[in-house]
Length: 364
Image (cartoon, rainbow, N blue to C red; front, side):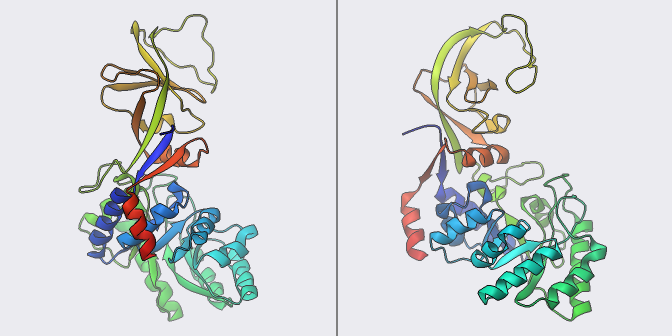
């Protein structure tokens, strides 16, 4: 089989998703399966739907359009605030979009009227991580105008934490979101269907036994795909952490010294690596590099050490593997490495569990 490639085990992803859906359902929380890390893969999306996710969410309209073209019967949400220039595409391809700017909601209203359809919005609230979100003091005014716009339905409120600043979801910020929900409902005499508390970083808080208040939805990607929560990257009990692996091929294998020869300056990426002289060691080069994957996010097999990487080369040493030319090595990935590997056109995407795929398509 050709390399480099990402191997995606649909059965393990389905297991992870179903396990989280069932555990969260006991806390009154539904799951939106987030597909952005796997570029809106229809195969993975089918597995998520079979596992019982409430709908699919992605931050790129292009990924959502790709899933739509595969005839997925699912509610699609754009979970990044829409671009004004893409408003028509958002209304055509999604049922819901997550918004922070009233100007964008106005444009969505205009495009929805042109298309003679209704578009639902979730308004995102800033609760400390300082990425996207309406400031709490401005929320009532934004809701008031949103409710006045034709062809727009206010579906709910949401927030996002731990992505930019690493702010942890806790009783304080989740309690604030619950109180804001009740404030909006009381002020405007409405009932909000969705209160989306965040992402895979919320799992420790949810499963910690705390009262979850009005939170009834989470947007999960990393925890399903990699089997880890997103605050400390701890393994979630009962989940597979090897549902996705990266496989690369050895293109050179030699004994080489660890100490460079000559005057040292910056490398190709503007850094000056620190080198420890360890004598002569077995060194192998794999045909993948920084253009394809976040090298720092790779976990090599036991006994193998990553020595460094450049645009197209990954340098490793191993005392346990026979790193002959043509041999393959499999790596586990963190979220950053997964995102880049899935985005690279030079990395093949290979799906395991073909029987599951057929069953998923039959159900769809």
